[in-house]
Image 1 (tube, one colour):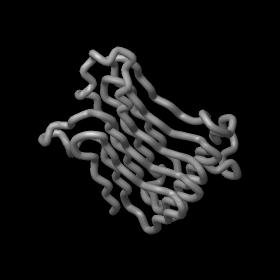
Image 2 (cartoon, helix red, strand yellow; image 1 turned 180 degrees about the vertical axis):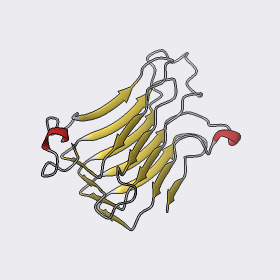
Image 3 (cartoon, helix red, strand yellow; image 1 turned 135 degrees about the horizontal axis):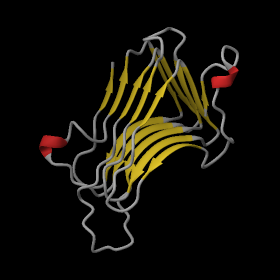
Image 4 (spheres, rainbow, N blue to C red; image 1 turned 45 degrees about the vertical axis):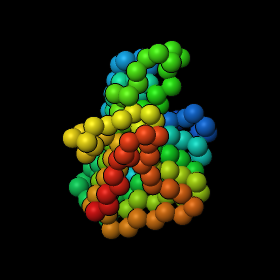
Length: 173
């Protein structure tokens, strides 16, 4: 994951160790909810198995919000190269007697001029096993890609899913 342009501001550039299990995570277990992840940058690259992810077991997963710093600048680009942005309610408690039907996936919102997904990348939300009530479906597990000039999806996916009930919406503006 790279945040920012190292040529313009190398001090603010974020580059964790590359590879699987590398990234930014907000996770919770049990009945608690995970926090949100908010990134304000004009350039973001998630690659080589890197992830930006929120997840929960029995609570509500946080949302992922990625905003261009300068408003919708033609230089603002979000690139995923074998990387992922995920918000999910995993719903796999060790004690099967626990009711996990109230857990909720967070939303993924990206405001950028250009988004590019390649080589098995994904932007996804997943409500495993939760049953979101009809009056709350607009609140959980949605993907919103806004202010886009260009969206490229090459051997990758943008999806919402659930095991039971209705999955969230995917909206591209």
